[in-house]
Image 1 (cartoon, rainbow, N blue to C red):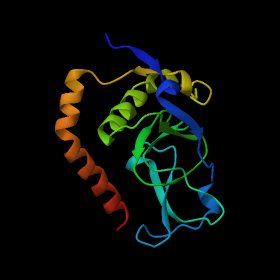
Image 2 (image 1 turned 135 degrees about the vertical axis):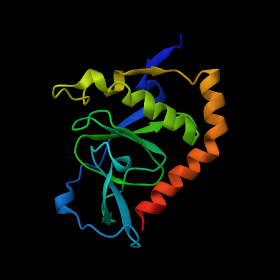
Image 3 (image 1 turned 30 degrees about the vertical axis):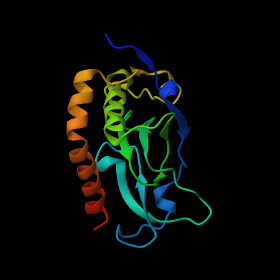
Image 4 (image 1 turned 45 degrees about the horizontal axis):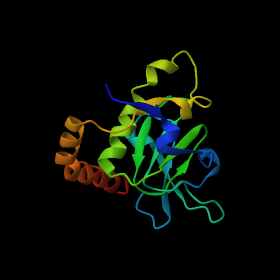
Amino acid sequence: MQNLIKISDLFEVKYGVNLELVHIEECKSTDYNAVPFVSRSEKNNGVSAFVEKIIDIDPNPGNTLSVAGGGSVLSTFYQPIPYYSGRDLYYLIPKREMKVAEMLFYAKCISSNKYKYNYGRQANKTLKEILIPKNMNENEVFVFSKSINFIETYMNQIYKNLRR
């Protein structure tokens, strides 16, 4: 059995920028200033729109995991580039260097805890305490390392398609 640790042992848990899409200027994904807007959706990698960069508000950093604390609770996605976020969205910054495949592994581990949050229960207070594997086991390392190029290509393609 794998050792389990708290999310907060592997990641810094931060609350996102908490913007409301209705108050932001939407734009095309191909526009120069376009920044993905990630919401609590379980679809489209959480990206619900592209918005114009806001001069005085820094987006959440890229190479993080976005996690819905409410809405589609624990919908977790790897975000390769900086993004704005809506209400009740957290982002996780790895405390050590992680490859994309490992980030995707942890995204899956976190979302597999969704069943604990039905009937309107949110993960706002308990997110840091959720237990996940300390590291990937040998079989997972093999599978993920074999597919790392595929995964990185796939993630790049998703964002390329979103930017069209």
